[in-house]
Length: 350
Image (cartoon, rainbow, N blue to C red):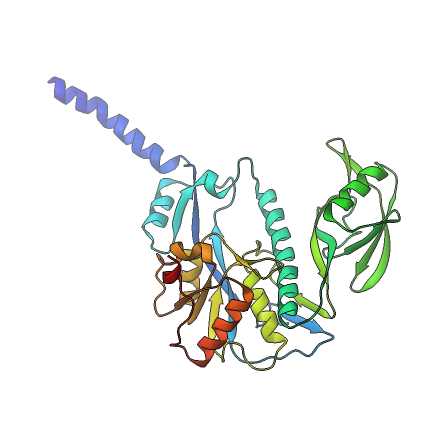
């Protein structure tokens, strides 16, 4: 048998083994794909208005303001070569190194908790920004952003409870809550005075030790006290802060007569801060694809995402740079009046 033939016979099984391993072993990558879009001016799956208002007139007009989402592969999810190749070849999907998407050691529970906290706090920021745009006064407060199952706070505290006092000490900053619980110690009840649905409520919770530190099992965040009640009812399976801008616009539209969008459909993305500034998000190209598929005529893009957005297939949908909620509102109003009018563009920022 010739040496070359022998080498080929030896190499072929090794090559087949490598091919099998490549298609069966998990690889350290994560994927992004277009997610659903939700008309925040519409109804939830329960048939109720997503934006509910009490103490102020609500205007239900035509038009859609769509928040956009992206399907991100879960932490610790196995990704194999065929799936990764499929995502890489799809113009609307993306593949990233695992560590870029998921911090080291992140679990599914960590991701769920962070997404839930970001969603609830972004909604409060959006309400505050929308009301400020209307000239209303809002007051910062400290509240419950997440309650862990099976902890002392489970069943006692609720998300959006606003802290007034702990053991008689006023709560003014986020750090005050942990400090007050630590000072109370473990296994002795601590008295919490909270504002719940506008009513002052007193609750007793007994801290437990976790990693040597007294805790009650909550995540605390910055919230606001509003002159009237506004709530946003979004599927709790949707997490993250990236819908802040669209929440703010939809709330503003609900609290003002007439349709902000002129009866048309807009979409967009971007975090929102207390000053109304729009911040960057992940997966902008996938969100643009989702909005395009759902018929949006205009898409609002955070400034820091403009360069990436220009690489997406937007079709006939206009990409508009949104520096602030105020800028975005003016752009939408101008577009509703004249779809061909000049608007802040991502091209100008690139």
